[in-house]
Length: 157
Image 1 (cartoon, rainbow, N blue to C red):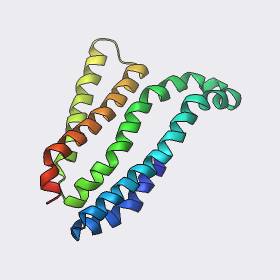
Image 2 (cartoon, rainbow, N blue to C red):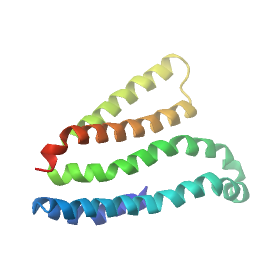
Image 3 (tube, one colour):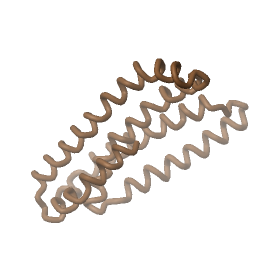
Image 4 (cartoon, rainbow, N blue to C red):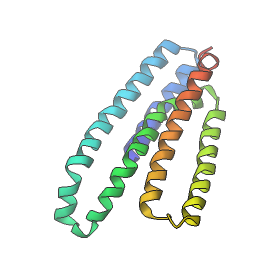
């Protein structure tokens, strides 16, 4: 997650400048470059995680093989969070921050409800928490994307 966050820091200043100068076509190109950069990172990392992580962990840290399952469970949610970053960049540039606040507030609320549910039903375990974390990442991406579609005209005018 450190490299994608660094990518965001690299793309953010120019996105702010382009948005403030209302150079929307250039900003769209800049955002496409951001997505391409993210995908250029995500694709090899996913492939390495799926195909290489287990043999490497087995060789160097065999006692941690049990944790690979949890990495695979949270991976879709982490990818969703990474892919929502360019939308978040647009929200920041346009100073339309309510969708981000709502997405994260709802995810905290959902998290609390499910943790309580897991606790009360004796299903509080690492696997369920990993599934919840992944689902919340996907929820945030879908909320960002849906709210972007809803607010698109206000953002780009």
